Length: 91
Image 1 (cartoon, rainbow, N blue to C red):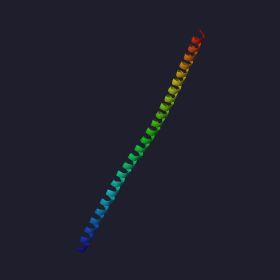
Image 2 (spheres, rainbow, N blue to C red; image 1 turned 90 degrees about the vertical axis):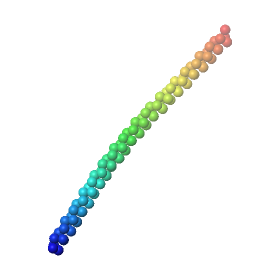
Image 3 (cartoon, rainbow, N blue to C red; image 1 turned 135 degrees about the vertical axis):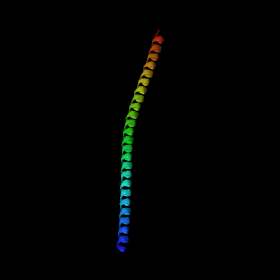
Image 4 (cartoon, rainbow, N blue to C red; image 1 turned 45 degrees about the vertical axis):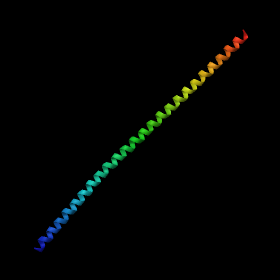
């Protein structure tokens, strides 16, 4: 009977070991999925940041071009006013 009890203990221990290995494999699989998800999120964030940076640069360039055009327009208006005043003063 001792041999039978010993075999039961060995079988129980083997089942426990199998369960522990299965749990560890499942946890590893979950960790792998989480890591892949984090990597995908990181890649998406990097691409979004790059896109945002490019959009920001484009917006700044447009704002500078608009400001330059406004300054030129004001300068042209001032020059026209001065010319008109100088022409009017001569008459």
